[in-house]
Amino acid sequence: MDNKLAFAAALRAVRATKGLTQEMVARFTSRPYVGRLEKGESSPSLDKLQALSEAMDVSPLTLLALSMAMQDDQPLAAITSRLKQELAAFEKAGGMKVLREQVINGELIPRPTGLPVNADNLAEVQRHKQAGYTQTETADRLGLSTSTVHDLWRREK
Image 1 (tube, rainbow, N blue to C red):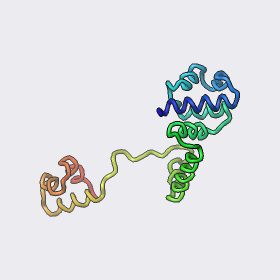
Image 2: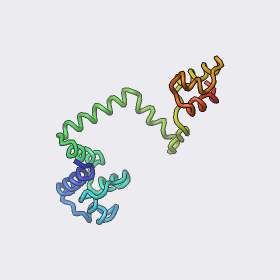
Image 3: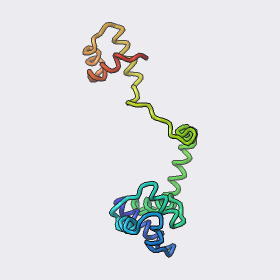
Image 4: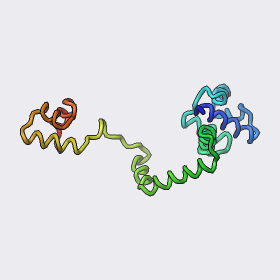
């Protein structure tokens, strides 16, 4: 099932079980927008998801879990079990530390620009450079593009 349709069904179901009208849910947004969501014509932004959830007094995760249950045609227990497993694995891998490191003093830290360098390719290109090979020879020997070799040729380890 399409994710917009699954979200529409979840939104309608939560609103209906809470006895809310579209107007009541739309207090943080517009009624036409809620209508478009409920028809499966739009997807909410994170801010709108939060606003809709607050208006219906449910967690945004509830709306997402219900949407996933519809989309994947799975029981809620399977969705919540998977969520628990994924969060436990994330935490075990040190994800919470990494997550907290992303924000300092309320500011998202800037990411380094560009693509990360493949350390193995860099080392091999530098080794070929020291051995006296040309960039073209290095590219042929390593199976890399000449532009990649050219970029790595100028870098230091």
